[in-house]
Length: 187
Image (cartoon, rainbow, N blue to C red; front, side, top):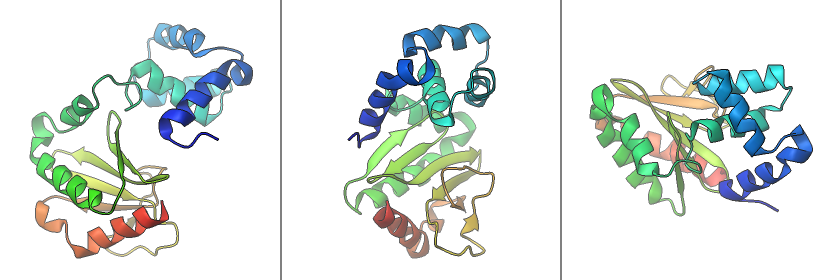
């Protein structure tokens, strides 16, 4: 049974023809010819026009854009691009979070185009530079009540249950690291 993200993606690609009627090599030119350039637009097209499930639509869109850690040739470049320009001041926060999380044990750091996914067995958190002055930590904590700081994720990202907003290094404290550790242990 496929376990790692790379294995899961490979299994999905192998099953594309059977499940969708087209191989990945057939889907890519269709999406490129659409003229759409945003991930959400491509996913919506595949789901509405071709009635694909979200999982297949998402994977094909990522492959088309080359915007996840399993399609990008240079994952460091994905992170560098996230923290370029006006968001460069957030990079020390990102680096400190990565260093802290790696102390928990085995962590897979999986950069995407707009955020970085953190996985143990499953995704337990994301790190996203949401504005020029704020990095959001998305956490998968389904049985944890929200607080003033640990807010319900809402429309932030459907893959997490909570969000913590950070604007400076001093906000990486025992409380935040506790939530990250709790999410890690569940993931």
